[in-house]
Length: 149
Image 1 (cartoon, one colour):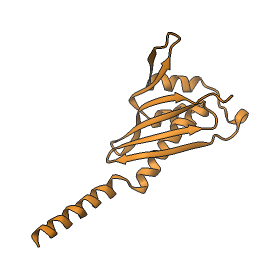
Image 2 (image 1 turned 180 degrees about the vertical axis):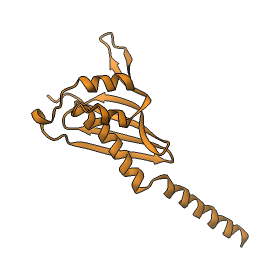
Image 3 (image 1 turned 90 degrees about the vertical axis):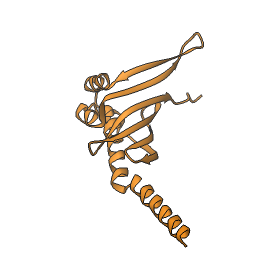
Image 4 (image 1 turned 45 degrees about the vertical axis):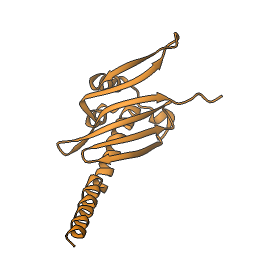
């Protein structure tokens, strides 16, 4: 009988931990953070970009070289913020941005997200951390979409 109670307690404890790992509020905040990042760049809104990014962000791209080897290009939060400030707002020329955000995982204070738009020719794979109660983008690795023939 003690074993059964112990197993039930462990199972309930596991359910409580699992359910606390993802809340509706976290899901909403993660999507909002990702949209601040994507729409901030699309509309040249550096304040939204800054709100989304952790200051120690690393954005990377594995780029194929002509010699058949690959290299990793790196962009910091500061560089991404500065590029955003120099962008133009694409809303008037290209209309509303459509964005598909897929949250792959939320576990405690970390999340993994895939984001794709109808405008940019790449897909972002985003890692976020919940830092002092706010979701921030810590890492991004991106890949170009295949060219349509």
